[in-house]
Image (cartoon, rainbow, N blue to C red; front, side, top):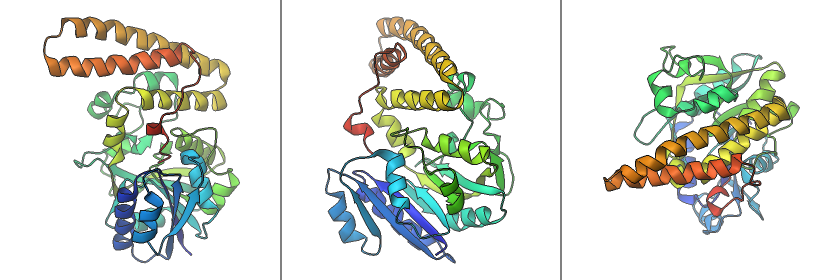
Length: 326
């Protein structure tokens, strides 16, 4: 078996079905299997998937164990030489999987590869490539700036916009939404770290792969439509998922940069939230246009939650929105 594709589903049966169909219709020349882990969905996903995808191996988790544990569970049923971890809200375009596989096979130095992720409107998701988090690049993590100044070393996303004929290029980290890794590499580094419920586990994985001596590469010639890139943002616009992301970054920094550095990150985030709120609140008071006021209110709620977390008001409680594990 060449490849095992692991998909972790939570209340996303329609997406998962389309994802599997896109894999089957576009992937040629590979002997592959698909394992779908249902993360205790509450919308009858398991029954729908059993009916619509009879040739896919379904694994049921009795509880929602999150993204990292869900993928590790799916890996236990994998028989492929390599493993592709794929979000259910992806749609594979053309020979993306075959090209990723070829890049992974191209050199013993390559341990994992990622691909180009597109939003539903075909704009590129800059999260395809990620730098390992530090305080500076996290404070400056503003999408408009990244798109406007992609060549800044701060974000390390230049390969997204360089003309390199789709060749695999070494990067620090790639998105866990579509990440292919060699089986022996994945085993040797200890699978996905289960210190994270959602977000951050892909950075952790890529960091350990690189630290162990392998390359992580971005394959610009492989393209996948990732609908979650914008739907997740809409769901989490009030700040809950944004806070969960910050908590995951804090966990990463504490593990690999030390507790003192992680606390400094928390402190600088607190200052950043205070500054943003000091600007947003007067703007909300003075603004008369209703659409602007609504956007500002959402931003205030988001940064208020971030402020609360940064001020040390305990570990955030996960709501159903964050318990998707995908």
